Each structure stands twice: as structure tokens, then as C-alpha cells.
Image 1 (cartoon, rainbow, N blue to C red):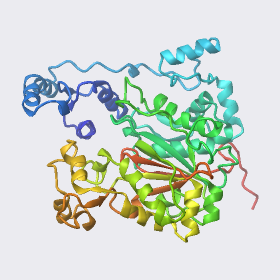
Image 2: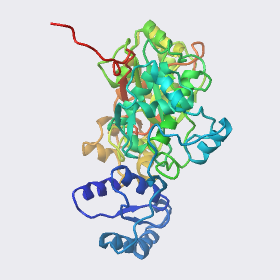
Image 3: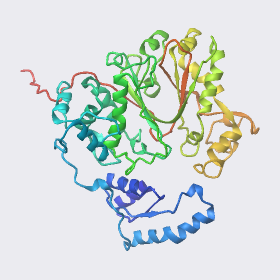
Image 4: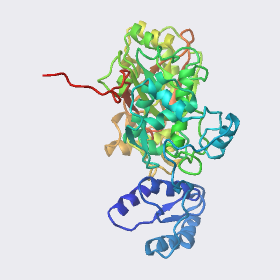
Length: 474
């Protein structure tokens, strides 16, 4: 609603945004990020999901209506501005001095750190980080819609120094910043209440040379590159995009920082499978160095997958995908349409089991589509009865008849008939990583368009930003 109000205000039409209690700070920050300070707000009492219709209407009439009128007539006091309205220091200003302990304490107090120790981003350290790259420090990659700040190479480097990234990691960080700046990704949703968090997935032959781990412990802290770059993303969202509790981060629980997941390039080459990035951008292939990002609500280990053939291992893997798919199915119909794309991470031995039988990745997707299913009645409860995110508590057979879902969702009217958790096989994303000697997999449920699957190539060529080139003589 606030973004609709921003569109109205941009057209010169006065507006009032109705927000839930506890979201006033986020609403004010969103308006400020779009260039509108002191947007008029009308706050509802309590949480609408936990109130009966009568209580909700009563609270609205006795409290919220007056705020709407005040906001439209200008008779009410403007909402208190969030703390971020003070003039920010320039990029090269010195904002703190002291010992390592004093700097870290100050960064925690001011919300500039994630609570873990950071390396102080002195001007000398940041300049040294960038010196070998040739990139223009003041080059603008894009804009953070949530805060109104520019995404500059300098700000990327500042946060990279804080998390201990190597200068060689800058091309990966630049690709991540381009994803965050891409409207298709939707970085402004990074603090929604379900607490979905981004996962970066790295592809290409350059990954191992940059120090990224794709083997045992592929999704655990411990490898410098995976860990420091993963931490950089969370810190960058905090410091540049304003995703803090006081501003935009409204996660009810949240997830721990996710390290970079790196696909096992050698395995993909051996079995002839395309990398995950090629599922997003068909122009990419096995030799492409690329970074992919999406946001995920939850995940589950599929442990000790037993079987020596695709037919034996597929039912268990499909069951794992079905088990992690809960309210997220509103992205099949409700919050979104055809926008649920879960991720299945296969250990190399499982991927090789499929490939040894001649199965392509598309073959695996088709087989999983048949097995990743739940009863139709449960699907309807998840998108309707147990959630207020899909209007009208629709039946799947009706959605099919209206053209909203494919026919597979209405094969019969039996409430116990199995229906898929995605609309089509290619909606199942598959990556290959982890211990090559273990038959485990990991399934993750994505948050639909709230961090949509987005891929950017990684440019490893030396930058010519700061090189003065002289054209040859005629």
C-alpha cells in the first residue's frame, strides 16, 4: 500500500498509508527511500490475523479512521522521523577513532555491524583493497530503493574490508550488487516478516581458483571465501539498504547468514549437466562464471538417500521437496502466480547416479514433478484456510477451470488426489554441491518474487576504469 501511496504522491495526489502496528519505522524509511519524508500514516491496532472480524472493524472505526482523516486534511501531526534523517557523513569522512575494541564497540552501538567483530574500514584499507582492481571507487552500480542510497564500488569495498573479503572477490561482490540493484530481484523485500534470507549460488570454472568450497560442508562457515562473501551480503543490506530492526527488517525470526553455495564445477563437466545459472539465463553455459541469488524461507536435509538407480532415489527426494513446501505455496496461486521455485541441492554422488543412467537435469525435474506432491485438500488449506494471503479460500478445481492453474491440479475432484507443489517441472531448481561421498540432499523453499531468482555474470577481466587510454595515431 505504501508504494501505491508513493505513486499517488508523485502524481500530486494526497495519500494516507494504513500500516500494521510495529511497522511505522519501516513505512517511514520506505517513504524516505523514495524521496518522500513524513508520509502520512494510519496505524491499525494489533495484528489483523489475530483478531476476529468484529474486533478488527471496531478497532479500525474507533482508532484508524481518525488517523486517515487527519492525514488527508493535514490536521494531524506528521509521524516522527526515523533516526536515519541526520545528514550522513561523506564516504571518506573519518567517523570514529580508537582501538580495535573501541571501534567494534562503537560499530555495534551504531548498528553498523552484524554483532560480530569487524575489521575497521580505514580509508587506507579500503583504498588498498581497490588499488589492485582498477575499479573507479565512485562508480555507481545502481540504487537501493529501500534507502535511496547509491550502490557504489566504494561502499561495496568498505563492507568487504569489514568482513575480511579478499580483493580477488570483488568481481563476485559487484555481481551481487548488480543483482540487488535489479528490480526483478526485488531487494526491497529483504526484510519481510517471514524472514526469508538470500542465498548466493556461484557457478563457473573460476570459483575454485578464488578459494570457494563446493565440497564437504558446502553450506557451512569455515571456508574463507564462502563465509566472508556471504557475510558481506548481510552487512551490505544492513549498512546500505537499511535492513535493521529499526528500519526495514521486520523478520519475525530470520535465518543465520548463509554462506555462498558453490556448485561443483568438475562434477557438472563430468556428467554433462548445465549449471544452475543456465536454468535462469539460457545464454549461460558450463564455462560461464556467474552468480545467482534468490531468497529462501526454510530448508530441510534429505539424509541418507538410499538406492542405486534414479527410480529408487527419486521418491525420497520428491518427498523432501514436498515437505519444505508450506505456506510458500501461496506463490503458486495467491501472493503470486506460478512463482514458487524451490531448490534441491544434490550431493555429487546423487547427481552421478542420475547421469550414469543417462538422465539429464530436465529428466530429473520431470521425475521430481511427479513425486513432489501433496494431497489437494492440504494444498487448499495451505493457500486458503490456514492463511489469509489468498482471497476466497479457492478450490484447485475452480482455479483450473478459471485458467489460473494447469490441468494437473484438477485431474479429479478427489480431495486426497496428489497435486504438484510447482506448476511445471522446470520450476524445480537443481544444484550440485557437497561431500562427493555422501548420498544426502538439501531442499529449500523459496519466497517467490520476494527475492526472485536472478543471475548476473562475473567479469574477471581487469577493470579499465582508472586507465587513461590513448587512441593510436591514424
